[in-house]
Amino acid sequence: MTTYAAPAVRPRRAVHIVTWTGQVLLGLFFITVSAPKYLPGFEAPASFGEAGLGTWFIWFVGACELAGGVGLLIPRLSGAAAIGLVGLMTGATVMNLFVLPGAASNAYLSGALLVVFVLIARVRASYTRALVGSLGR
Image (cartoon, rainbow, N blue to C red; front, side, top):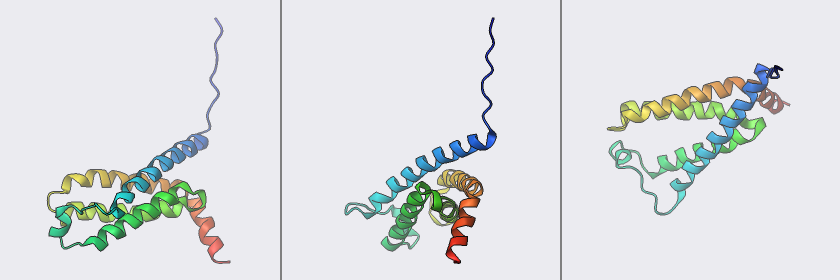
């Protein structure tokens, strides 16, 4: 019987592949969820009105989602986009827990995405350092 040893995958390469796969999926997701906020028929959830948040806030969140989604797809911007999405998900988690009535269950998703974006920002820290370094020139 002949045995075959599978080639070892370097851990760094596996992390790189998994991170890019996640970035593409999350980037496309955030681009997709931001688009309807700018369509004429979009209505903000009633809970936003109850919390005193207007259409401007929906547009602001949509712009942040769109910028983060596009940024995740561009290698040079991916680390910075992940950091921005950490901020967005922190705000979403706080809003879901303390501001929007009846939205506490949504905090699980926004909290999980917060952790994922922290991990992406950590893996893409070299891209962020390079971006910041290029701005100082």
